[in-house]
Amino acid sequence: MTEFMHMDNFVSEILGRDIFAVERDFPQIIRFFGGYGILFGGRKDIPLGEYINTLPDSLLDDIGIDRRQLQVHLEFFLTGGYGEFQATHTVTIIGGHDKFGNEEHVRLDLSTGSITGIVGPTGSGKSRLLADIEWMAQNDTPTGRTILINGTLPDIKDRFSPQRKLVAQLSQNMNFVMDATVAEFIHMHAESRLHATNDNHQVINIIEQANRLAGEAFTPDASLTSLSGGQSRALMIADTAFLSASPIVLIDEIENAGIDRKQALDLLVSREKIVLMATHDPILALMADRRLVIKNGGIYRIIPTSDAEKQYLTELERIDNRLQQLKQRLRTGETLI
Ligand SMILES: Nc1ncnc2c1ncn2[C@@H]1O[C@H](COP(=O)(O)OP(=O)(O)OP(=O)(O)O)[C@@H](O)[C@H]1O
Ligand SMILES: [Mg+2]
Image 1 (cartoon, rainbow, N blue to C red):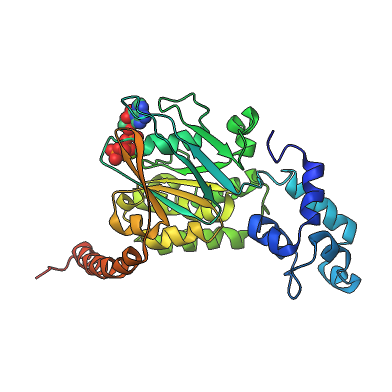
Image 2 (image 1 turned 45 degrees about the horizontal axis):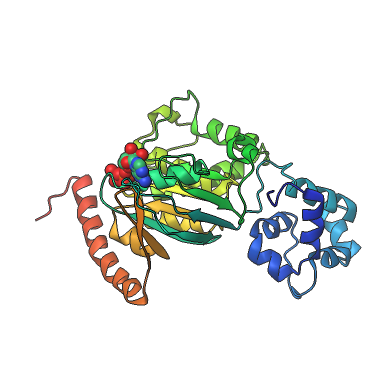
Protein backbone atom coordinates (compact mmCIF):
# COMPACT_ATOMS: atom_id res chain seq x y z
CA MET A 1 0.00 0.00 0.00
CA THR A 2 1.49 3.32 -0.98
CA GLU A 3 1.35 6.47 1.03
CA PHE A 4 -0.56 8.41 -1.56
CA MET A 5 -3.45 6.01 -1.90
CA HIS A 6 -5.39 6.97 1.18
CA MET A 7 -5.62 10.63 0.58
CA ASP A 8 -8.15 11.63 3.16
CA ASN A 9 -5.95 10.24 5.87
CA PHE A 10 -2.95 11.69 4.16
CA VAL A 11 -4.43 15.19 4.08
CA SER A 12 -5.37 15.15 7.73
CA GLU A 13 -2.01 13.66 8.59
CA ILE A 14 -0.26 16.53 6.80
CA LEU A 15 -2.46 19.14 8.48
CA GLY A 16 -1.53 17.65 11.84
CA ARG A 17 2.21 17.95 11.27
CA ASP A 18 4.14 21.01 12.35
CA ILE A 19 5.30 23.35 9.62
CA PHE A 20 8.96 22.49 10.16
CA ALA A 21 8.23 18.83 9.40
CA VAL A 22 6.12 19.65 6.36
CA GLU A 23 8.84 21.93 5.04
CA ARG A 24 11.40 19.18 5.44
CA ASP A 25 9.41 16.28 4.02
CA PHE A 26 7.05 17.93 1.55
CA PRO A 27 8.59 21.18 0.30
CA GLN A 28 6.08 21.17 -2.58
CA ILE A 29 3.35 21.96 -0.06
CA ILE A 30 5.24 25.00 1.15
CA ARG A 31 5.51 26.13 -2.48
CA PHE A 32 1.79 25.54 -2.92
CA PHE A 33 1.11 28.04 -0.12
CA GLY A 34 3.82 30.33 -1.47
CA GLY A 35 1.75 30.53 -4.65
CA TYR A 36 -0.94 32.21 -2.54
CA GLY A 37 1.54 34.52 -0.86
CA ILE A 38 1.40 32.57 2.41
CA LEU A 39 5.01 32.35 3.44
CA PHE A 40 4.99 30.97 7.01
CA GLY A 41 6.95 33.76 8.59
CA GLY A 42 7.35 33.45 12.33
CA ARG A 43 6.22 30.30 14.08
CA LYS A 44 6.83 27.00 12.39
CA ASP A 45 6.44 24.74 15.39
CA ILE A 46 2.66 24.62 15.19
CA PRO A 47 0.60 22.20 13.11
CA LEU A 48 -0.07 23.31 9.56
CA GLY A 49 -3.84 22.96 10.05
CA GLU A 50 -3.74 25.20 13.10
CA TYR A 51 -1.72 27.79 11.20
CA ILE A 52 -4.32 27.86 8.43
CA ASN A 53 -7.13 28.15 10.96
CA THR A 54 -5.51 31.15 12.61
CA LEU A 55 -4.67 33.06 9.41
CA PRO A 56 -6.35 36.46 9.81
CA ASP A 57 -9.44 37.01 7.65
CA SER A 58 -7.90 40.25 6.42
CA LEU A 59 -4.96 38.35 4.92
CA LEU A 60 -7.27 35.87 3.21
CA ASP A 61 -9.34 38.78 1.90
CA ASP A 62 -6.20 40.30 0.43
CA ILE A 63 -5.33 37.01 -1.23
CA GLY A 64 -8.90 36.67 -2.45
CA ILE A 65 -9.59 33.20 -1.11
CA ASP A 66 -11.57 32.00 1.87
CA ARG A 67 -10.43 29.40 4.34
CA ARG A 68 -12.65 26.67 2.99
CA GLN A 69 -11.51 27.24 -0.61
CA LEU A 70 -7.91 27.15 0.53
CA GLN A 71 -8.53 23.79 2.17
CA VAL A 72 -10.29 22.45 -0.93
CA HIS A 73 -7.41 23.57 -3.15
CA LEU A 74 -4.89 21.98 -0.81
CA GLU A 75 -6.78 18.69 -0.89
CA PHE A 76 -7.04 18.88 -4.66
CA PHE A 77 -3.30 19.51 -4.82
CA LEU A 78 -2.46 16.67 -2.46
CA THR A 79 -4.77 14.16 -4.08
CA GLY A 80 -3.12 14.63 -7.44
CA GLY A 81 -5.82 16.92 -8.83
CA TYR A 82 -3.14 19.28 -10.08
CA GLY A 83 -1.39 16.55 -11.99
CA GLU A 84 1.36 14.61 -10.44
CA PHE A 85 1.92 15.56 -6.89
CA GLN A 86 3.58 12.70 -5.13
CA ALA A 87 4.69 12.96 -1.58
CA THR A 88 7.85 11.12 -2.42
CA HIS A 89 10.66 11.51 0.01
CA THR A 90 12.74 8.36 -0.43
CA VAL A 91 13.71 5.99 -3.16
CA THR A 92 15.22 2.74 -1.95
CA ILE A 93 17.37 0.53 -4.14
CA ILE A 94 17.41 -3.09 -3.01
CA GLY A 95 20.22 -4.95 -4.73
CA GLY A 96 19.77 -7.83 -7.14
CA HIS A 97 22.74 -9.40 -8.87
CA ASP A 98 25.49 -8.50 -11.32
CA LYS A 99 25.91 -9.92 -14.82
CA PHE A 100 27.51 -13.07 -13.39
CA GLY A 101 24.76 -13.67 -10.87
CA ASN A 102 26.75 -12.45 -7.83
CA GLU A 103 24.46 -10.88 -5.24
CA GLU A 104 24.72 -7.12 -4.74
CA HIS A 105 24.13 -6.92 -0.96
CA VAL A 106 22.87 -3.35 -1.17
CA ARG A 107 19.99 -1.52 0.42
CA LEU A 108 20.32 2.17 -0.22
CA ASP A 109 17.93 5.01 0.66
CA LEU A 110 18.07 8.16 -1.46
CA SER A 111 16.20 11.14 -0.11
CA THR A 112 14.85 14.44 -1.40
CA GLY A 113 17.54 17.02 -2.14
CA SER A 114 20.26 14.42 -2.61
CA ILE A 115 22.45 13.95 -5.67
CA THR A 116 23.83 10.50 -6.37
CA GLY A 117 26.46 9.95 -9.05
CA ILE A 118 26.71 6.69 -10.95
CA VAL A 119 30.18 5.91 -12.29
CA GLY A 120 31.78 2.91 -13.94
CA PRO A 121 33.29 1.77 -17.23
CA THR A 122 31.37 1.83 -20.49
CA GLY A 123 28.95 -1.07 -20.63
CA SER A 124 29.10 -1.69 -16.87
CA GLY A 125 25.41 -1.02 -16.27
CA LYS A 126 24.95 2.67 -15.34
CA SER A 127 22.06 3.24 -17.74
CA ARG A 128 20.60 -0.08 -16.62
CA LEU A 129 20.47 1.14 -13.02
CA LEU A 130 18.70 4.34 -14.13
CA ALA A 131 16.26 2.23 -16.15
CA ASP A 132 15.57 0.04 -13.09
CA ILE A 133 14.59 3.15 -11.17
CA GLU A 134 12.51 4.54 -14.00
CA TRP A 135 10.63 1.27 -14.31
CA MET A 136 10.50 0.83 -10.55
CA ALA A 137 11.91 -2.64 -10.94
CA GLN A 138 10.21 -5.35 -8.89
CA ASN A 139 12.66 -8.15 -9.43
CA ASP A 140 11.48 -8.17 -13.03
CA THR A 141 14.46 -6.68 -14.90
CA PRO A 142 17.78 -8.34 -15.85
CA THR A 143 19.37 -7.14 -12.60
CA GLY A 144 16.79 -8.55 -10.20
CA ARG A 145 16.68 -5.23 -8.32
CA THR A 146 13.70 -3.91 -6.42
CA ILE A 147 12.87 -0.23 -6.03
CA LEU A 148 10.79 1.06 -3.14
CA ILE A 149 9.11 4.46 -2.95
CA ASN A 150 8.75 5.85 0.56
CA GLY A 151 9.76 2.46 1.86
CA THR A 152 6.98 0.55 0.13
CA LEU A 153 6.51 -1.26 -3.16
CA PRO A 154 4.99 1.17 -5.64
CA ASP A 155 1.49 0.32 -6.72
CA ILE A 156 1.28 -1.07 -10.23
CA LYS A 157 -0.78 1.91 -11.39
CA ASP A 158 1.89 4.29 -10.13
CA ARG A 159 4.47 2.45 -12.16
CA PHE A 160 2.80 2.92 -15.49
CA SER A 161 0.36 5.79 -15.28
CA PRO A 162 1.69 8.88 -17.08
CA GLN A 163 -0.55 11.01 -14.85
CA ARG A 164 1.33 9.92 -11.80
CA LYS A 165 4.76 9.87 -13.29
CA LEU A 166 7.30 9.80 -10.50
CA VAL A 167 10.33 9.98 -12.69
CA ALA A 168 11.61 12.55 -15.16
CA GLN A 169 14.34 11.12 -17.32
CA LEU A 170 16.82 13.23 -19.23
CA SER A 171 18.19 10.62 -21.56
CA GLN A 172 21.31 11.05 -23.55
CA ASN A 173 19.84 11.20 -27.01
CA MET A 174 17.08 13.67 -27.30
CA ASN A 175 15.50 14.62 -30.57
CA PHE A 176 12.40 16.68 -30.99
CA VAL A 177 10.22 15.48 -33.81
CA MET A 178 7.31 17.71 -32.95
CA ASP A 179 6.37 20.47 -35.34
CA ALA A 180 5.91 23.30 -32.85
CA THR A 181 7.68 26.36 -31.57
CA VAL A 182 9.51 26.44 -28.27
CA ALA A 183 6.77 28.59 -26.71
CA GLU A 184 4.01 26.26 -27.95
CA PHE A 185 5.85 23.27 -26.54
CA ILE A 186 6.22 24.85 -23.09
CA HIS A 187 2.56 25.96 -23.11
CA MET A 188 1.46 22.46 -24.05
CA HIS A 189 3.61 20.98 -21.38
CA ALA A 190 2.36 23.41 -18.76
CA GLU A 191 -1.22 22.66 -19.75
CA SER A 192 -0.73 18.92 -19.48
CA ARG A 193 0.57 19.47 -15.97
CA LEU A 194 -2.34 21.76 -15.14
CA HIS A 195 -0.14 24.69 -14.36
CA ALA A 196 -1.45 28.14 -15.22
CA THR A 197 -1.94 27.90 -18.96
CA ASN A 198 -1.59 31.45 -20.11
CA ASP A 199 1.43 32.21 -18.05
CA ASN A 200 3.79 33.82 -20.51
CA HIS A 201 6.07 34.76 -17.69
CA GLN A 202 6.70 31.06 -17.05
CA VAL A 203 7.54 30.48 -20.72
CA ILE A 204 9.97 33.40 -20.80
CA ASN A 205 11.56 32.22 -17.57
CA ILE A 206 12.11 28.69 -18.84
CA ILE A 207 13.63 29.93 -22.10
CA GLU A 208 15.86 32.36 -20.22
CA GLN A 209 17.11 29.60 -17.95
CA ALA A 210 17.69 27.29 -20.91
CA ASN A 211 19.63 29.97 -22.72
CA ARG A 212 21.80 30.47 -19.69
CA LEU A 213 22.79 26.81 -19.95
CA ALA A 214 23.30 26.63 -23.70
CA GLY A 215 25.59 28.52 -26.04
CA GLU A 216 23.68 30.48 -28.64
CA ALA A 217 20.35 31.79 -27.43
CA PHE A 218 17.09 30.69 -29.03
CA THR A 219 13.82 32.61 -29.02
CA PRO A 220 10.28 31.55 -28.03
CA ASP A 221 9.24 31.39 -31.68
CA ALA A 222 12.13 29.13 -32.71
CA SER A 223 10.97 25.82 -34.13
CA LEU A 224 11.77 22.83 -31.90
CA THR A 225 13.30 20.90 -34.76
CA SER A 226 15.78 23.73 -35.41
CA LEU A 227 17.34 23.44 -31.94
CA SER A 228 20.78 21.89 -31.63
CA GLY A 229 21.42 18.90 -29.37
CA GLY A 230 22.73 21.13 -26.59
CA GLN A 231 19.89 23.63 -26.92
CA SER A 232 17.29 20.82 -26.79
CA ARG A 233 18.94 19.40 -23.72
CA ALA A 234 19.04 22.82 -22.04
CA LEU A 235 15.34 23.34 -22.82
CA MET A 236 14.42 19.95 -21.36
CA ILE A 237 16.44 20.64 -18.22
CA ALA A 238 14.84 24.04 -17.62
CA ASP A 239 11.43 22.60 -18.45
CA THR A 240 11.92 19.70 -16.04
CA ALA A 241 13.14 22.01 -13.29
CA PHE A 242 10.15 24.35 -13.57
CA LEU A 243 7.23 22.34 -14.89
CA SER A 244 7.71 18.73 -13.98
CA ALA A 245 6.35 17.75 -10.62
CA SER A 246 8.15 14.42 -10.86
CA PRO A 247 10.12 14.12 -7.65
CA ILE A 248 12.82 11.89 -9.12
CA VAL A 249 15.15 13.10 -11.86
CA LEU A 250 17.43 10.72 -13.74
CA ILE A 251 20.19 12.18 -15.87
CA ASP A 252 22.20 10.07 -18.27
CA GLU A 253 25.49 11.78 -19.12
CA ILE A 254 24.84 15.49 -19.04
CA GLU A 255 28.46 16.29 -19.90
CA ASN A 256 28.36 15.59 -23.60
CA ALA A 257 25.61 18.06 -24.23
CA GLY A 258 27.87 21.09 -24.45
CA ILE A 259 25.88 22.91 -21.79
CA ASP A 260 26.88 24.46 -18.50
CA ARG A 261 26.63 21.28 -16.47
CA LYS A 262 27.18 22.87 -13.07
CA GLN A 263 24.36 25.35 -13.60
CA ALA A 264 22.14 22.60 -14.99
CA LEU A 265 22.67 20.56 -11.89
CA ASP A 266 22.06 23.53 -9.60
CA LEU A 267 18.80 24.24 -11.39
CA LEU A 268 17.53 20.69 -11.04
CA VAL A 269 18.67 20.24 -7.48
CA SER A 270 17.29 23.53 -6.22
CA ARG A 271 13.84 22.12 -6.89
CA GLU A 272 14.00 19.56 -4.09
CA LYS A 273 14.28 16.51 -6.26
CA ILE A 274 15.99 13.17 -5.83
CA VAL A 275 18.68 13.30 -8.49
CA LEU A 276 20.61 10.38 -9.96
CA MET A 277 23.21 11.06 -12.58
CA ALA A 278 25.30 8.65 -14.62
CA THR A 279 28.56 10.33 -15.51
CA HIS A 280 32.13 9.89 -16.70
CA ASP A 281 32.97 13.44 -15.59
CA PRO A 282 35.00 13.79 -12.36
CA ILE A 283 33.57 17.25 -11.62
CA LEU A 284 29.98 16.02 -11.77
CA ALA A 285 30.92 12.89 -9.83
CA LEU A 286 32.39 15.02 -7.01
CA MET A 287 29.41 17.37 -7.02
CA ALA A 288 27.26 14.43 -5.99
CA ASP A 289 26.87 13.62 -2.30
CA ARG A 290 27.89 10.06 -3.02
CA ARG A 291 28.64 7.90 -5.99
CA LEU A 292 27.74 4.37 -6.83
CA VAL A 293 30.51 2.49 -8.60
CA ILE A 294 29.12 0.00 -11.09
CA LYS A 295 31.11 -3.02 -12.17
CA ASN A 296 29.92 -5.99 -14.26
CA GLY A 297 26.34 -4.81 -13.93
CA GLY A 298 26.35 -4.65 -10.13
CA ILE A 299 26.70 -1.88 -7.54
CA TYR A 300 30.23 -2.57 -6.47
CA ARG A 301 30.93 0.29 -4.08
CA ILE A 302 29.12 3.24 -2.53
CA ILE A 303 31.51 6.10 -1.88
CA PRO A 304 30.39 9.21 0.01
CA THR A 305 32.10 12.33 -1.35
CA SER A 306 34.65 13.19 1.35
CA ASP A 307 35.54 16.72 2.48
CA ALA A 308 38.97 16.26 0.93
CA GLU A 309 37.35 15.41 -2.40
CA LYS A 310 35.04 18.40 -2.14
CA GLN A 311 38.11 20.57 -1.63
CA TYR A 312 39.76 18.96 -4.60
CA LEU A 313 36.67 19.89 -6.58
CA THR A 314 37.71 23.55 -6.37
CA GLU A 315 41.02 22.66 -8.00
CA LEU A 316 39.28 20.59 -10.67
CA GLU A 317 36.91 23.46 -11.41
CA ARG A 318 39.87 25.79 -11.88
CA ILE A 319 41.37 23.41 -14.44
CA ASP A 320 37.97 22.97 -16.06
CA ASN A 321 37.42 26.74 -16.35
CA ARG A 322 40.70 27.00 -18.15
CA LEU A 323 39.62 24.25 -20.57
CA GLN A 324 36.23 25.91 -21.07
CA GLN A 325 37.97 29.17 -21.96
CA LEU A 326 40.04 27.35 -24.56
CA LYS A 327 36.89 25.69 -25.95
CA GLN A 328 35.20 29.06 -26.11
CA ARG A 329 38.13 30.54 -28.01
CA LEU A 330 38.06 27.66 -30.47
CA ARG A 331 34.32 28.11 -30.95
CA THR A 332 34.62 31.79 -31.64
CA GLY A 333 37.36 31.34 -34.18
CA GLU A 334 40.39 32.44 -32.21
CA THR A 335 43.67 30.60 -32.29
CA LEU A 336 44.89 29.02 -29.06
CA ILE A 337 48.55 29.98 -29.19
N1 LIG B 1 23.07 -6.85 -13.50
C1 LIG B 1 22.93 -7.07 -14.82
N2 LIG B 1 22.57 -8.25 -15.29
C2 LIG B 1 22.42 -8.47 -16.61
N3 LIG B 1 22.65 -7.55 -17.56
C3 LIG B 1 23.01 -6.33 -17.16
C4 LIG B 1 23.18 -6.01 -15.78
N4 LIG B 1 23.56 -4.71 -15.68
C5 LIG B 1 23.64 -4.25 -16.95
N5 LIG B 1 23.31 -5.21 -17.84
C6 LIG B 1 23.29 -5.06 -19.30
O1 LIG B 1 24.57 -4.65 -19.75
C7 LIG B 1 24.48 -3.83 -20.90
C8 LIG B 1 25.28 -2.52 -20.73
O2 LIG B 1 24.76 -1.77 -19.66
P1 LIG B 1 24.52 -0.17 -19.75
O3 LIG B 1 23.98 0.22 -21.06
O4 LIG B 1 23.70 0.16 -18.56
O5 LIG B 1 26.01 0.37 -19.60
P2 LIG B 1 26.55 1.84 -19.24
O6 LIG B 1 27.34 1.73 -17.99
O7 LIG B 1 25.42 2.79 -19.24
O8 LIG B 1 27.54 2.15 -20.43
P3 LIG B 1 27.92 3.57 -21.13
O9 LIG B 1 28.92 4.23 -20.24
O10 LIG B 1 28.55 3.13 -22.44
O11 LIG B 1 26.67 4.36 -21.33
C9 LIG B 1 22.99 -3.59 -21.11
O12 LIG B 1 22.53 -4.44 -22.10
C10 LIG B 1 22.40 -3.94 -19.76
O13 LIG B 1 21.04 -4.35 -19.86
MG1 LIG C 1 24.88 4.39 -20.54
